[in-house]
Length: 296
Image 1 (cartoon, rainbow, N blue to C red):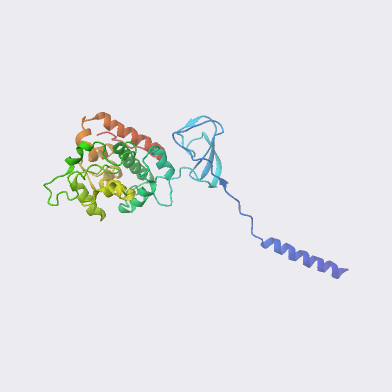
Image 2: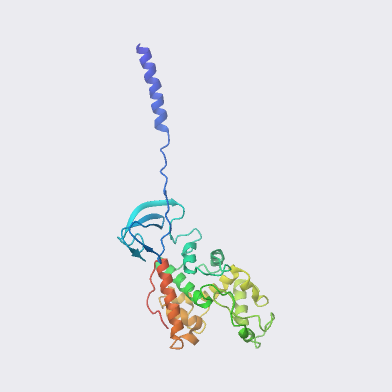
């Protein structure tokens, strides 16, 4: 009898030991709710996701970021189905694809988010300098000016074709090999003039002087020309758009560098205000601040 009991105890011990070494069950993260949008209205019980967490609205709210306002109840981490408007993307850009689509709901399919992120390697300091607040502010400033130039990323090329022959400066030693009417405004910053195509092409390692049409045919090249101007050209201003933001000179100086000769110093206050309004909207989408000196 004792032997039988001992055998049973040994067998039971083996079972217990086997149970002990079994791995613990892994908790599954909740599915993420629909991404929070700064332009949407939420009422009591409305669920959203933001920065990888789910939240539920306690009462009516609009433009109050989850996690930064007591209007939202934190329902915990989520791991599938998105994660909300988290600016921390695998591509390193502070603007998520969801935020990009929110900024440009009617954009031309030519202006792809992938084209923009593919272009970032040309200017790695863009939206990647300073604090998170400054990084997001620069992205918002660039995209606000781009939105103004293209009607919300609708226009790939300049609408007024009567202007096309005007953008050839024949005094340049290289002339206009693609034709006098080939250097009209194209792309997100509406690059124009043969000398700008020459300079941008040289900087990017692309022959844009002989083939300026690449800017309206290839999304990544189009975005690269916009980033070239933003990061390297001061235009009629005194600094680049990049330096204006990262050195806290203000959004107004980015306007001056792009179209200041026409719009600034009272030249066209309505156009200046339009750019400021779009910049303010985009900073809200990204959850950052505008800083001071918005006008020029």
